[in-house]
Image (cartoon, rainbow, N blue to C red; front, side, top):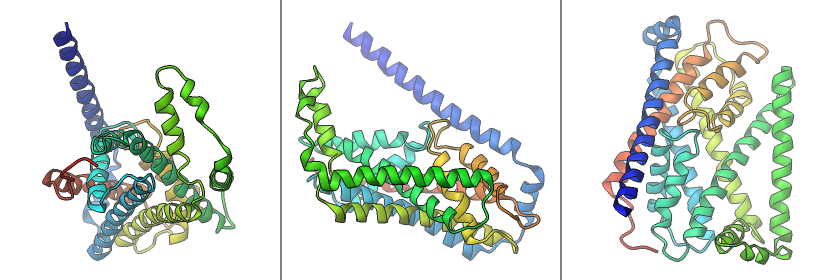
Length: 330
């Protein structure tokens, strides 16, 4: 019987993996088929500034590396030793698996499991660090979106709504974090241990989420790196626009649209957020006061997606090469 159950579980796992890969392939095909022909012809024939495109790809890669560094800071703050090369290796694993996980966060679960295997005594804390890292990443994205939208005096009703929604969420999140930093010592989670079966694990997760207690510097560091990540991503999009169009939206206009669109891509709707992010970018650029004639946000979004998909290939080589792999569990 155990053998039969194990076989069924293995078969189910393979079936789910197959469905995810099939869904990803289907969405990619759909994007290619529905991509406007005139945009495709323009992209093929248009003279491109390869230096700016190379810089754009560099900013995408830098953004990912900074995000892996941010996670390492959180892991070390939980007293779990982790080298930067190991954090980068596992970060690349999460990025790679995000391409076949619904939303842009699914790969983090695999990264958490793989990281937990390397720490026999602090596995719960390592898993919690991944969750905290994702939350901080989203907060940094909302901060960049809030700042970008606040710098403009001309916002459409939709962008104005997004602006105040982002500012409200940022305000609530910062107040929560400040409460933990300065008042966390007055909060006790001992009662969670009384929960049957899972009480001890839930208690350790809650304690790990108090990582910022009495650590304002850590808060500043992880929020600063998070904003740097999304700054790099937005600049990358701007460089793409500048590389293929003589007349294109300004850097500020990119900061008004790209961060909110990337926030939409975190919704668990499609593998890696493919399709959702491109649609959000195209729609939000239409909300700008004036778009240069002939400019297509969809072309820029498509090239940006291509750069995002290059990173997992780099990550796959880095991960399977074993560079940075720990030789023993921590």
